[in-house]
Length: 518
Image (cartoon, rainbow, N blue to C red; front, top):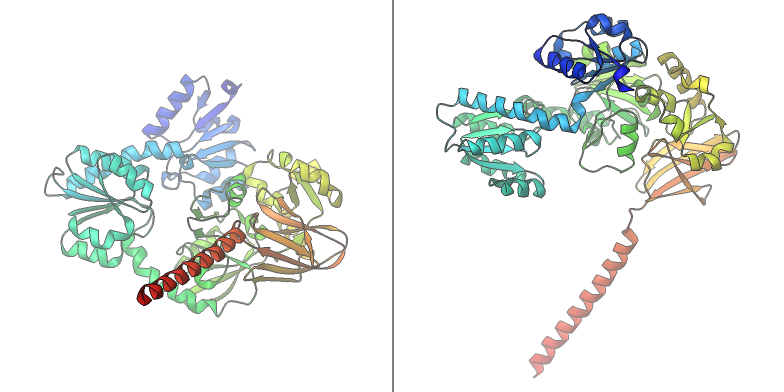
């Protein structure tokens, strides 16, 4: 029963004290730091990084398998928790907490506006960028104080919701033209939206600008062009081959400039399968793909060979990184590190695990497990399990960095000798000692068709969102060809439309000539 759980509440601010009282009223056993050795759950402050706690010492006192809950958890904190055998969960990632937290954030923003402005908010022309939880909470409160509020949002549904609240709304693409009409601009979007030119105009005409997103707008925009330009130069200096890259504390989507698949990615489109793969590992995936550096096993599984950062961030990276990264070179304004645990794309396993068994493993160690065993659905295990050995229970627990290195070495020994991306998918060549499934860390999609030695083969969805294909013993040539769902129908409709247009044009020309003759 949940009442038997013991909580250790760490931290002395008012929020921690209130949480401790609420837990005690709910019937839990609640204590402070002295209860850490017996605690089932550890409640840590928000934000964890700024709490100035001796985290390694505190979690070292916890019993193995304890659950720690913290707010805005960092990579270094996860590394410390992993070393202590404690599962660390970021409670600030919960969507309902984000909504509730937007209320004090909005009130704090209004307090800053009242402090900085020389006039009242009543009658002020205020532009609010974004209509997420913070944008919504702020816009309606400003309007209630008499401000003339306009919301700039990317999605039509957000603009419709703003207008439903009695606010004006404009597309985010009209920002440069719209900003001049307002004396106050508040950015709630966690991305570089305001360009340096818009900010310069704001300073020139004394427009109040408050950024309450995650990034400092001026700094972000000022070095964005430099990093992207350097990336174009680095593209020609990276070693050849089709591998993934990772980045550390630089701008999103650098991989696009390098023409490489990158773990750090921001985009509103993603394969649906990746939205199940990442959360199963405890990694948040919405419009942003941002696996933390502490999740080292994910780098081996996803065939990451190089990591790119800036010289200014090298020391921070080396302090946070595991032993698997070695300095490679510095060029074009970047420092490049090589993953010594790199496993080429396309490899085989000796063991498998059912999805039911996989879901019983703590999320914090699942990436390590995926380097050791292939995860099959219960149905697929009945079909393909005969080609692999069922992973013994004892081998589901030895999930440490040292064992990960050995697992990478074993996977590398089975890896494809050739892996090449192409315009229609990818090609691989692999030699197998026995008939086996060959795994590719590519998101599963119904648009893919696989061919093994020229013959169409079934694609197996594995690891809750990735792909594998069965290959015979010996040398194999594998091709995955991608064609989006509906493309064949769209081609037929396009051809039909062309025929209709030609017929209409011919009829129009014939009718015009007939009219002239008449």
